[in-house]
Length: 439
Ligand code: ADP
Ligand code: ASP
Ligand code: MG
Image 1 (cartoon, rainbow, N blue to C red):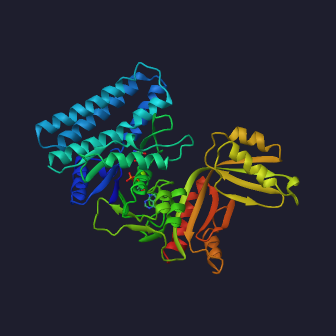
Image 2 (image 1 turned 90 degrees about the horizontal axis):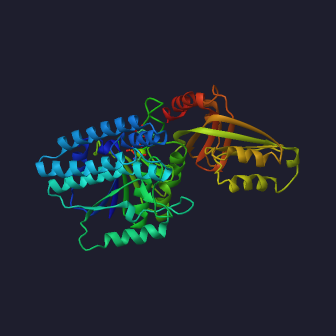
Image 3 (image 1 turned 135 degrees about the vertical axis):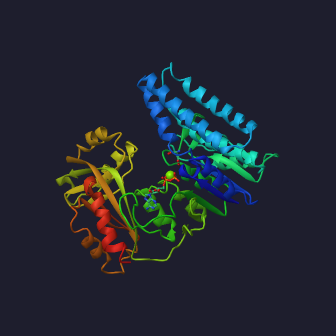
């Protein structure tokens, strides 16, 4: 069985919903994971923001506009009166629910319930549409099986067991519609897999059912060799390995949620990226191995903070790095890049929630310098030690960009640079011009 995930733009209008329905109606059993219609999650977060600030009028205005948009989509999507009515009634219950928060105190827990409504609406509207077209489908709520644990990591055992139970129900149809992004946490409360999390949902569902393939359908013809939002003339890459794709996703290729490759890699399930607007395009295939190529792709991750610890205690000492790492471990803050010299160590993080505490703890070991608003530029290619010249070519391509830090040798297929955020676009463009367009 395959798992197909359709992102926000792919279900962003009545027309797009119709196209997805046509794509999934091929009599093959499948699980279809849907995101919210594009723009909805942002609006729901804006509503939540107004509710925190008790800006009731603004919250009501956004709710009203969003509701209106849904009614327009409904009138464009359905042909028959009973379905228009049924869909409107459903959407009305969602917006009544959103309005019910207006005069109450608002907490993070409720924010999660509010943002979950986008995926709940898109899946219900799709399910009703398929029903109206006479295409049998089952709507399975992700809240019945998708779960994260106390560390916000997926609870693989729970997911598998509960999804299997849902799929074994006697009236289940071969075409299953379910929500991406939303889940329950370790306490059973509504939660989510963070922004862009529907890709992760699809991968987790695929891993849980040992799918034959996980397909991510979006608005572009696969993973491009550079970020199309910042660089012109980018090209789709036809084949990536799990490791290459994971690096690109983690280091900023927005097309994939940072964690979405991990479950597929664990179960060795091919991931295929496809374009809903051009289904005939080959897209990108991600499998265990892929053909080596000098430089395959470049991605960038913003919002990086660098922390430098300078200490003469490091000289000829052992155990120093352990102590430094323990600080980050105790504050549950992952480290992305690291560079060491005999008298200093520099690290980067992207989560600054505990930065003040981390600095306080690190000050015991030496002088601390902090630099923020940085970007990591990640270059994926064949950087095996046996090859010569590629590192030099990459450095040469970046000769006009001030480099704050370099990480080389951590893996054979990646080299990363730390630059100021304002230099990111230049770096991406130079790498495209010097390395990718010449490949
Ligand atoms: P969806 O709503 O379908 O999940 P996203 O907006 O999350 O879609 O991801 C698709 C977008 O990711 C593309 O439209 C593109 O602008 C952006 N993107 C960033 N980097 C890349 C890349 N390397 N390859 C392809 N798309 C990328
Ligand atoms: N709707 C969610 C978001 O906008 C999840 C997703 O689209 O993947 O982040
Ligand atoms: Mg996405």
